Image 1 (cartoon, rainbow, N blue to C red):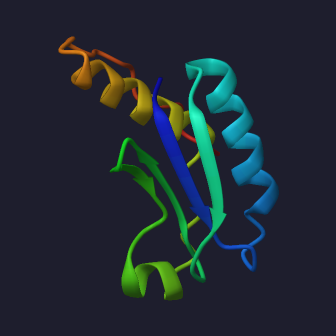
Image 2: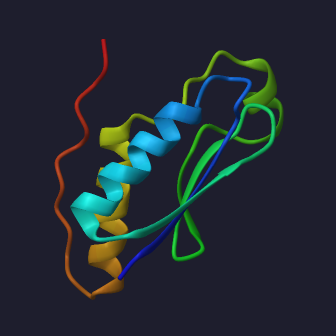
Length: 99
């Protein structure tokens, strides 16, 4: 069973999104998901201690209007990482672009 950890910034309004994503990952992958409040501007997702999706680091996270990765992008990243861990070749289409 995959272990997923989501750390989010409450001040940025990511609380509901983080918990909704956690529920979706639990349903889709049977994942055990931990959701924790993180640093200002943070929205990071780890799969088994490997960072698979992030809003950005350092200066970018604090200063630029960069949104958190979409749920579709997080799911695609976890699917790709899971396939790599299981020794499979993963050919996923890119996530749909958001308007």
